[in-house]
Image (tube, rainbow, N blue to C red):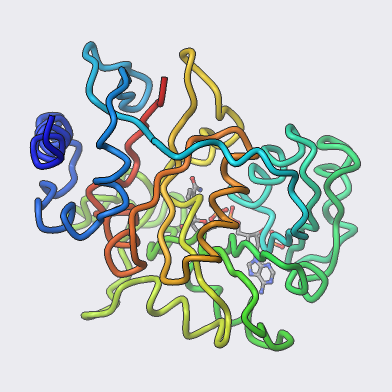
Length: 286
Ligand SMILES: NC(=O)c1ccc[n+]([C@@H]2O[C@H](COP(=O)([O-])OP(=O)(O)OC[C@H]3O[C@@H](n4cnc5c(N)ncnc54)[C@H](OP(=O)(O)O)[C@@H]3O)[C@@H](O)[C@H]2O)c1
């Protein structure tokens, strides 16, 4: 089947489920050449939407061979809330070492550390930020304070796990705002003008190689990489090929199937919550 047809099919599948997301644009997909490449070889798959396994198969494959090399990079996680703690759980399940940090200091993480075991260490934000790969798992509005006074990034890899959303105070009038389509989820979109979220994110980590990943699904999915006889798909995007290769390896070693969405400008937009066409969509590679 020609790649164009696969792109069309993929678009139709997603659009047909009307998941409160914008219809996929073929232009975006054509730009996301890596995704198109990944779709070239056929394999049966299944699309999971929320809890539901859609009753069809589609042509899908991540054609990349599993790299299978041992993971040597040090990993830091800044933020230990929903995203950070579940990343720690996911890494711990595969014996991947990481240092996790929070605003409240390492001692506040005692219970998480005793839950996940010895591969995960609690550290200061500066310690987590000194790793080869640093995952940022704080709320978008906290980026300035979390990343403000850290040593130079010196070309190290920073994974942007954030989405440009603000969390609403539970029970506040904003959670009832009829003009906010996301109010029921307790969030609202942050207006970045004509900028994309990773563009804004990158300004907080000057000199780093930014890869966007781990942001497109509910965090509960992160501790369940293998299910329904297949591997859950995680997207990643970035502008530095070597940095993307490292992040791909990390994703794969954590048990997921990794799909490259191309550049930050293209992939970041496709997978970014709340309005990215691929955000919150669960693919399972079987
Ligand atoms: N929740 C999801 O399902 C999900 C999924 C994908 C992506 N994301 C994105 O992931 C990011 C984090 O979301 P979340 O749900 O994990 O938020 P969260 O539960 O509120 O956790 C935020 C974490 O950031 C830490 N933090 C805040 N300011 C800090 C600072 N100055 N220094 C160090 N740590 C700081 C907090 O530390 P304290 O606990 O000490 O305050 C907390 O551990 C957001 O950008 C969100 O959009 C979330």
